[in-house]
Figure 1 (tube, rainbow, N blue to C red):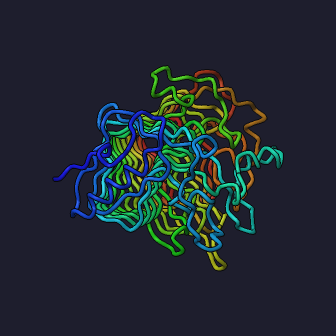
Figure 2 (tube, rainbow, N blue to C red; figure 1 turned 120 degrees about the horizontal axis):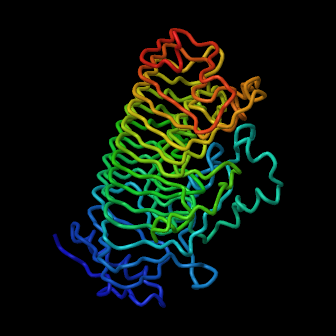
Figure 3 (cartoon, helix red, strand yellow; figure 1 turned 30 degrees about the horizontal axis):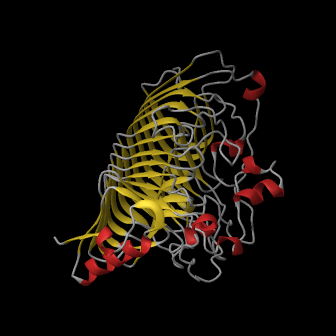
Length: 484
């Protein structure tokens, strides 16, 4: 395949002059030649928006760094966010792609490969929330104590975003995509946002970022494997289905495997120090860094496999449907977690219903949770499965589960009656401290538990299991939950 060296097209590699025009010229030349590899040799390339093209691989050689320029310092701007209409139902970051360091729209056969780096120094992590008028469920309940000024520091006004970049890589409706072998150091709001894309492979990526790591929104046929993602302030790897495309679109046939996610202090996964100074994420819950299905769930989510992954100092696995989606045929197996900051397992079917009039409660069914081991779990948060009255979480199997909690629950905790909070933003903390220490179930139908083991390091006065409105519960080889 023909190679195109960006320095031959005028891209400066000393980090002092803007280089994106030369990189874009090389990409255009490769595209016009019928495809090729655009090579970024060793050096530092200061850039505003880089525009991908069909048939082109952008290859970052060893020692190559693409640095996101800062509009306040470097005399330029990122491409303007698209005019996509009102965009009521998801935040600014989900709704735009062009305002990114590297972006592509409706492209075919594209790739970004390593082993070089992307450094998002000039990107912002902030952006406005959605313009959804209901507002209930727009933010986690843990943020209720924050002042308007504190919230405003995280949610820049729309006008203030013009010229800024808030994503490292953003792809909209692209097909046959490969992202492999490179590192992202600080990716803005999203290190990687893929919306409406299909036939993707993300492999051997290293991401240490200040907000979301990898977001797969309305994506079909995708593999994410052998990736390391550190994201203390938000989720590490997320599968969701927003209305950013202006239509309901599913996420289907996705595998996340052999990945490690974490919530260490920003930058300390890359330097190896694994810092633990930061205790809380911006939502005022403990650090995040997890794998999650949700929160945006307008389109259905089907046939998802999460396997052979490791969670370090992060929230646990979350599977959610709160905006009308059917979430079904989900397998999570062979997961290990250490230093779990909230619940190790959290399944929530709720009624936030952030969507057009007529959006109804979705469904969650056929969920397999198998071979999950979690240690040093925050005692406030047992594994939890919670549906709604008349809308249970259905057909769940929990097999070979091993959980170790820190302990510390009191007799007062055991008497708590958690609220329904049907329309709240879904987080384990939405219910407050729960009255069981190992497993809490509410509004569940057809649950099979086989070999569930749990312990607590210090005394805990709560019962191991509390369940209400649970139909067809089968417990085997789990004496802690079924003392018969």
